[in-house]
Amino acid sequence: MVGVFQLTEDTKTLVIELYSIMATPQGIELRVRHFTPSLTPWRESEPSLLRLMTYDSKSFLFVNQDNEQPKHWVMKRTDPNTYLANFEIVPEKGEVESSEIIFHRQDIPAPASR
Image (tube, rainbow, N blue to C red):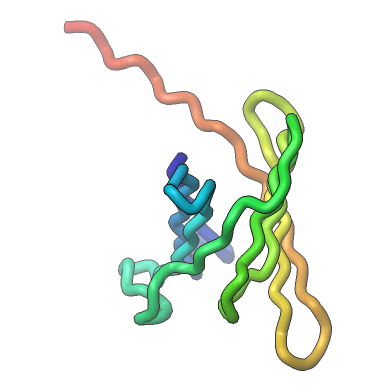
C-alpha cells in the first residue's frame, strides 16, 4: 500500500508525507518520509521504519524500534473507505506529542471511452 498526505495552511503546502506498507522477510513494515513542497527530503537519512507489532480486524500498531520518530503509529479502520492514523512523537525530554489524521479512499473516475 502506498499513500500520500499533504499538510496545508490556507492554500500553502507545508509538508508532503509519503508512506508505504509492505511485506518483507522481517515482517510487515511501514516506511514514512517527509518532503518540502518542492519534494526535497526534510532529512538526508533513510525514511522512518516502523514494524507491525500487533493487529486485529480493524486496527494495526506499528512501532519504531530505532531512535527515530514517530515511535508509535496506530491505524484504525472506521468504515470500508476511511481509517484514522494516530502517531506519537516521544522526545527525550518533555511531553509525548500525539497527532491524528483521517484518511479517505479516493475513487478514481473511469477513463472516458473513445
